[in-house]
Image (cartoon, rainbow, N blue to C red; front, side):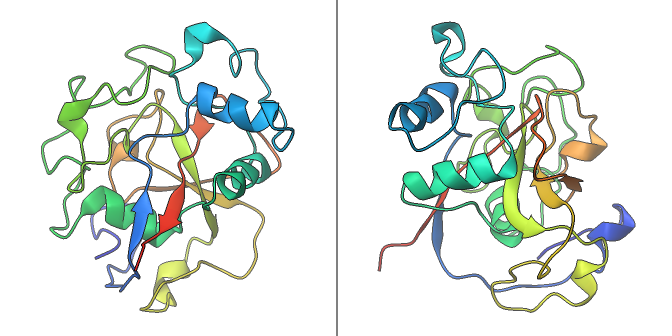
Length: 212
């Protein structure tokens, strides 16, 4: 089940989709992981000084635009998730409000609301694990997904493997970040960003097709 009747208008209508199986990264891609792609001369450096700084090796890579994220995912043998896949990984099958359930966001479950004012190492918030054991799907950094953004897309979304709109000016980002409030880290919350811009609060994770 995607969407929420108590969220923003863009999260409506609530609807059901069916997805093919997939694997999703348990955490966001880290600086150390991204650096390997740069060293392979496939990816271009993130637009910060952290991507190859050992002190931030296990923090999520940020300051990468959508194309850089997409390039890394392809190099790693995968792709960016669709918005529907991302929400399934975050919500599970019980229509929960947050990755961990319906309990409101707090400092034990995620890095948000300027508590740290910056990224933290991935995988620290085990109390915030999703239905499928995926970590950091709320807070730390928002995550690029494959879809173009349209506020009214849910009204016409296909019921099988929805790919998002055919075009647009912004890409969907999901999950909220270290500077998001409790409303914006809900599993149904939708946000968007210009794909040719990099942001200190936006990273990504990788999806692989399920092995038959």
